[in-house]
Picture 1 (cartoon, rainbow, N blue to C red):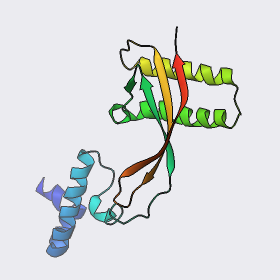
Picture 2 (cartoon, helix red, strand yellow):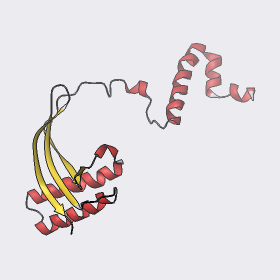
Picture 3 (cartoon, rainbow, N blue to C red):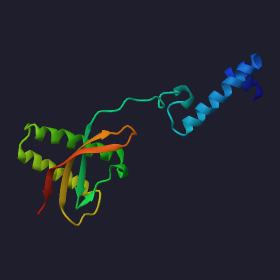
Picture 4 (cartoon, one colour):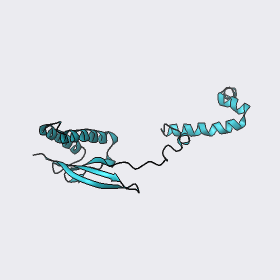
Amino acid sequence: MRNFLENTYLGRVFKADKVLFAVIMPLVLLTLFNAVRRSEQFPGLLYGMYSQKESALPDYTTYELYIAGQRVDYLKLWDINKELINTPLSEMAEAHEQGKISNEQWVKFQQWLFSYCADMRFVTDNTLKIYKVTVAYLPDGKLKTIKRELIADYATN
């Protein structure tokens, strides 16, 4: 076993240059540690990637959903659930606003959205309200609601 270790790359580096080995080993061990934790990057090599200052973002639009009077909390949803709600919602709401889809298609979409969201929770009231919310960042990084309008009020029979 000792002969095997001496013939490896790290074994040869240890024999040739102990200082270089002392530099390489922590990098190898930390990379293995991060790989075990399922992190795909070694944080030391990404210094500054997540800590640089960014300029303020412009206003943007988001949507609030209320099912049976309760707000759907996006933070509690899995990423796939968020995507299956947000992507079609933003596209269909914009298309409806621009007149690219009919009212009948908009109602069918609301029906689908309600049934999809209602499957995730037990509802007692079959209502869905969709609000279009325009928000902006304040200088301290917090959000400020600029405009909030009801764009859909759906109820099943």
